[in-house]
Length: 380
Image (cartoon, rainbow, N blue to C red; front, side, top):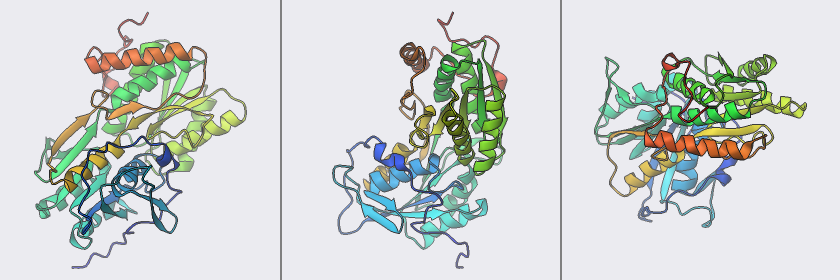
């Protein structure tokens, strides 16, 4: 039966392509190239934020297109990257954009059935059910699910031999940028802009709150959730509201809604206000160079690249991975803006990072786990 859902192969972007591609560090060049006679076809189903979200989806696209395929997406199609930019794996990318959540499963099936891909990449926890269903129907095909494990009917994680799942310990990076916010705030009030109130985003909030308390126990954290990830205008409104309430550092963990919060801070900076914003998933500093303090960076690009490399080399395996600071799956973006005490603040962040990696600091994964005394060891 032919699928009727509209999916864009090598899709046109919903927003301009991510400019940060040029700034991304090179992926490891340890992979063997696919035979020149036949390129492997690797498919990617994007989440609802789509191409140009300056975040999660764009990071996955960078790993597949620029690093693995050696191409850049420009309006109208692809062009090759220069040899100096990256040595590709020799694959052909096939990109499907999902317009609504109901597109996820048919899009994945379309990749396998009509596009002939050997590895299908699904980015975002909302694709978990779709990956599970299509992987079970196609046990000879491989799948990568980023940001969620496979879950049984009882909600317990489990594995399939043809599915690799990757989750991130986001709370560790959020702790560090929370510590940064605590050191940078002048008003003693910082804001958290979340998307959906789900366990994944609650991990962001928990880590951030704990980090703020570690370096500035007297600071107040005000949280506001938008309820989604695709409403730029609502994110901007929430950001403006938090700024009005006195927050001078915002942490935007809300997808496209978070881009709206970044815009709110950018406009406030343009008006001369001393406020900052911290991004998530990818470094958004190119969007607002005078406003973005840092970002929690999830190495989705590297996870995607490594899955493609393993597929090309014939050594892809299923299973589950959890990546944090220790594994290099989570980091924080360079702090480019100046503020009083910046040098000491950066040294403090590296100290805290080392303690998390060593296991001396256990970062909470839900706000309910926070206690009044969340200051890191060694904090006065």
